[in-house]
Image 1 (spheres, rainbow, N blue to C red):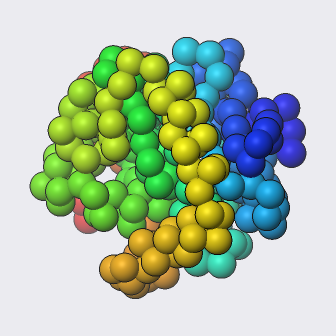
Image 2 (tube, rainbow, N blue to C red):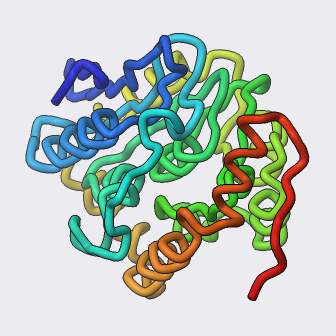
Length: 260
């Protein structure tokens, strides 16, 4: 683990904090690796009964750190973590963790942050939080398991609108759309109270319940996760994707070429 993650375990409650507050907890490579390592360690720790996932400072996460992650050459189609590539695993690992995971979300939750949030079992969101499926702004698609996770609790037409437009929406709207389990003024305090309730239940029954709920639909996750990666690989560093990035940085209207 690294200083990009803060970890505390007390009375069976593991608190995992994204810890780049000066960067609004934007994801660089270190944060991706540390978050995955933390999730994998929790999977092996039978003393953990419930997990709280939140962000330090003024945001849950502003998404991808575009400066530090620019120019990456990772093969997204390579399955490095079971069904997933590394970036997908940062969100999917919380689905795999055998105990309940509660996300407490405030401030900003964009792109990668939104997909990590949706890996949690329960999501408490402040009403003033700003959220977005932001990837289309940069000429790419959501590819951190979001397309496989959202469909279990968000209507398809809402997913389509938010993905196609990259529109910013509020925590109140997140509750209306299904992203939020509950909209609350103190999401971290509510998460802690819920975690205490869960920690005082039979841990074997809690783990069995999560397993049953995870498997109640059993879609072909492997195919869906690979489809994310293939689509993203084709888009990354293509002329129109580069134009999307440059237009954002230069604060101008993009000039895209017609598809060939």
